[in-house]
Amino acid sequence: MADMLLTGRWVVVSPTEVLENHTVAVAKGRVCAVGPTDEMRTRYAGVPECGGATSAVLPGLINAHHHCYGVELANQNIGDDFLEPWMFAAPSMVGLSPYVSTAHSALRLIKTGVTAVVDMCSAGVSLAEGVARLEEKAQAYRDVGIRAAIAPGERWQNRIVHGAGEEQAFLQTLPQDVLDALMRCEADRKRLTEQDYLKLMQAIIPAGDAMQQFWYGPTGPQWTPEPLLVEIAKEAERLDTRIQTHALESYYEGLESQRIYGKRLMRRFADMGLLGERLSMAHTVWAGQEDIADIAASGAHVSHNPGSNLRLRSGIAPAAEMQMQGVSVALGMDGTTLGGAEDIFDEMRLALTLNTPPHSRASALAARDVFAMATLGGARLLGRQHELGQLKPGFCADAVVVDMSRPMAPWCAPDVDPIELIVGRLKACDVDTVIVDGKRVLEGGQPTQMEEASLFDRLRHELIQTPPDDCARVLSQLLRPYLLEWYARWEHESPHSPEAARRPTTPDPVLRYGSSN
Image 1 (cartoon, one colour):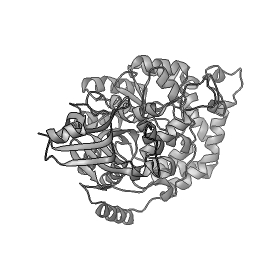
Image 2: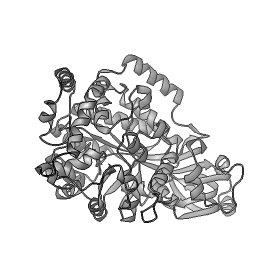
Image 3: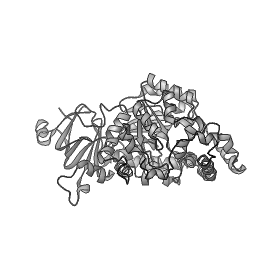
C-alpha cells in the first residue's frame, strides 16, 4: 500500500523522461510505482494525493556546494569583491550558532525545492568544539528535514596570499599600520591542528547515515599541506566517505599551481592520489583543456556555481565544455547566488544563459543539461546516483511538487517542452510541496517540521548577544589595494623570469568570455 500519491500534468522521472498526466506512488520513503493518473487512482484508492492537473512533479533538486552564512552578505555590509580580499572579511560575518545559521539556510533551500545539499563549513578550533559544531549542524538539517553532506575544513597555510614562500615577501610590501592590523588579526585567530582535524573526521564520519553524512572538506589546495591531502585521500577510501574542496576558483588560483609548483593542479591532485571518483571540486572556473581531460578520465566531479563565480569576480566556468568532454557536472549555490535569492531555478537559468556563447563553434548547454546538473549530476557527486536524482521505482522519495499556473499564464502552447518551461520560467515561489525520504517537509510553500518565526526570533536574539566584529571588514578594505597590486605582478612578470616560465597558458580573463578556443 502506498503512503501518498504525487500527481501532475507532468512527472519528470529524469531529465530525459517526462510523462504527461502521470502519478508517482510513494511507500516507506521510496518510489514504489509510476503510472497514468487514472490507473494509479484506481490502484491506490483512498491514498492521500498531492498535486493535480496544474502541477509538475520533479525529482528532489540537489545543491552540490554551499556555505551557511546565516544572513545574506549584503545585509552584513560585506560587499562582493575579488575572492582574495573578500576572504579577509569572513571573520566579520555574524556570530550565529552553527545550529541557527544552518537551520536558516536549510529552510531557504527547501523553499526552492532543494532536498539535498553539500555544506562546506569550518571545522572549529579544537577537537571537542569541532565535534559539537558538526553535531549541531547535522541536527539542524535533521530538524528541517533535508539531506546533507557536511564537509568541514580549515586553512592551514598560505592564509595571507596564495603560494608557498610568498607570504613574507608580501608582508614586506605593507605599510606598518596595515601590517600591524593584519598581525593582530592573525594572532587572534585560533585554528584546528592538522592532526586534530584527522581525529575529528575519524570520530564524526561513522556517525553519518542516509540523511546526514560527513565528508572531508579541505578548503583548497593552496591552503592545505600536500601531505595532509595525501592522508585525506587515503582516509576517505578507508572510511568510505567523500571529499569536497575548492579548486581553480579565482583567476589567481588558476595561476598559482604552475607558478609555484611548475605543474597543473589536476596533475598534482592525481600525483597525490586525490583525483578520483570520491572527489568533488567547487568552481573550477580556470580549468584548461588538459585539466578537463584529467577530471573526465578520473571520474571526479565538478560543482558549477555560476552566481557565486560572477559575484566574486572569478569569471565564467567552462561548464558546457566540461560536460561535452564527459565530466560529471553538478549545480551549486555556494550561499552567494545573485541578489542573495537562494533560488535554484534562477541558478539553473544563469548556468544556461552563461553557457550559450555567441558563436556556433563553442560548446553550449541546453535546458535539459542544466536540469540534469541539479538532479543527476548532484546525485553522482553525492555517490548516490542509484537512489537520488530520479523518480524511478526503488529510488528515494525525494520529490518537488510545483504549481505551473504562474509560469503557464496567461497562455501556453499545448506542445510546450516541460523541461524548457521549468528551467526557463519556474521560481521558488512556485514550489508548493517538498518531500524528502517520503515525508512532507514543505507544504503549501511553508515548512512543516520547523516554525520559521521562532527560528528568526532565536536568530535575532543571538545577533543581539554577539554583534558582528567590524575589525575584519575594515582590515579587508585596508589590505585590498596591496593584495590586488601583489597579484597583478603575477600577470606582468618578466617573460624571461623563472616564474614566468612556469606560468600556465591560461587565456586573458576578458577573452575567456567570448573565446572560441
